[in-house]
Image (cartoon, rainbow, N blue to C red; front, side, top):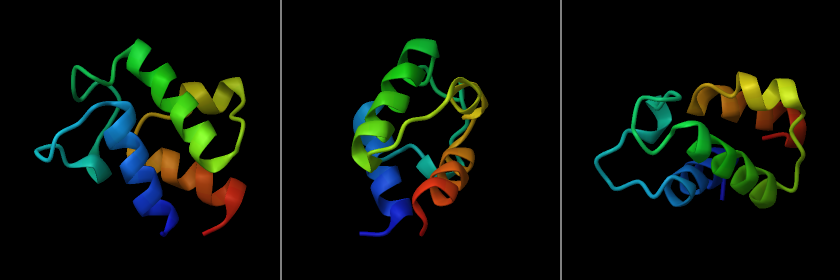
Length: 78
């Protein structure tokens, strides 16, 4: 499974999203589920799924699916 597919699945599971949400264009606070508490759960789920550790600046900067994808690509490759 590609990085993007795994990340999409992680977003869906961590934020308990349904099929109506366009995950790849999702931005922080676009939906009620991605609030500050949801953000921390999402970060933890991504770290677990990809066996990575984000630093504080990365956690703060993770403002969209695309940003998360770019961060992961830099950390684990494609």
